[in-house]
Image: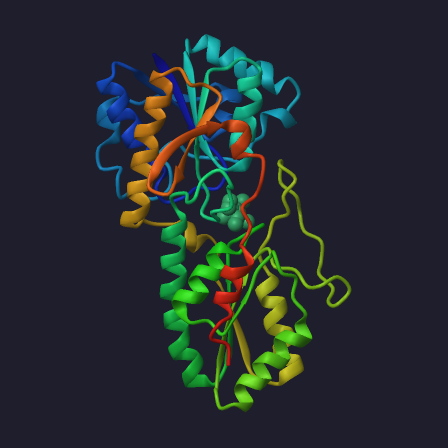
Length: 341
Ligand code: F6P
């Protein structure tokens, strides 16, 4: 088969490891690969590159995506779907492999319904896709955040400061909760649990009253105050209707300092969490996803995506992959707050 491949949405450590596994296993199976540039935009603009075996050498530890990515949504462009179909026909593509998160897989699902032979590979550092236990990139993001929290501990202690650490996590607080637990954060704020700033401040005051000179607060970027307790400014929307996040940590640090009089600082880790080389764990998931995707393509199981369940890689309908967000469960959230004192 002649297989088109693209990476869409935010980049993520492990994307290149998927590309490598797909091309290596697929070439062995007699397939030929074409990489579309910058996600769905490549199919709208007809920009592609050949992906011979040699193009995948050295890719396993390399961060980012050699194909480039974007948040372009063909269903937000006039005639987008027919342009994509025309590009696939002009390039003689038999099947398409879409590597991305809920938005990219959502487009893949609609194209599958329109008759395109498509298979999906899930990707998100936020780990909020319900169809899969884990995605590659998440473990790397948690490790980077944990390393940062470790470093912030020593400077927070030296200066008797409250350090607010903002991490990615638009709808779900998995990165915040994992890194908060691993790094020993004193308070973790997540999108699933709107916070009361008075409660945040009184918990920090209580901790300091009990003898701690400093506190570490980890905040997921999608965290929101309980309605009516604090005002936030409106932000821009992207093509999938998502708010461009980033900044809640600054607002919280300012409020904490104003209300408690404890000197406070904010560190926003943002895209640092998505950069650089994937951890060994993420390389393993990414490689297994790539191998499994070739299996699905070989078997003609179109309209599916691969997913990790326990230690197995399974195939599930693309519709499942985009149906629900996997939010942080209560018991995990409780554990992430366990050592607050
Ligand atoms: O897709 C995951 C994510 O990491 C979100 O947590 C974050 O809001 C978003 O990407 C930001 O990506 P960008 O700035 O590249 O649009």
